[in-house]
Image (cartoon, rainbow, N blue to C red; front, side, top):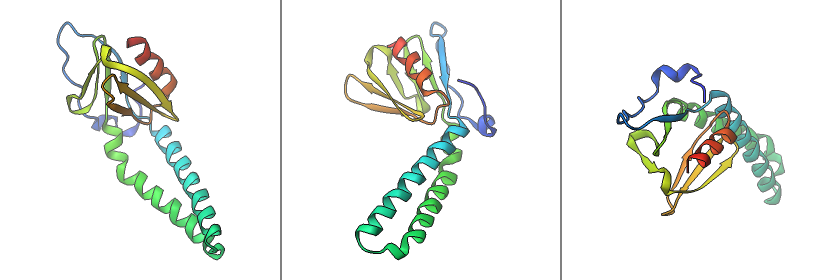
Length: 148
């Protein structure tokens, strides 16, 4: 994954690895994917609001509901953007390591799934980890599955 985006300089420092552990891949959020995901969220929310307003008989409020939905999602996107863009995940020859030294051993990875630009890692114990807004979630999924 590439190190792109204006917020790269503000990323959380990656963990210090022991000398005998090797970095295989680095997963960082992609700004364009973040924006696309929020547009999709706003569009889905707008459709849901339209349907709900029509069902309850408030068709005259459609434009207000859609505008409010888009405004709320835009505000959410701006609010969470700085923190989201700081997250760095490392895949090593032994583990998947996330922010705050969150560590999942490769042998403990049971499943890897994709949803739009995100990758969900499920451990054998049932714990779920979400690596969000990746530029190429399919490649990230393949790398993690290859490591598991």
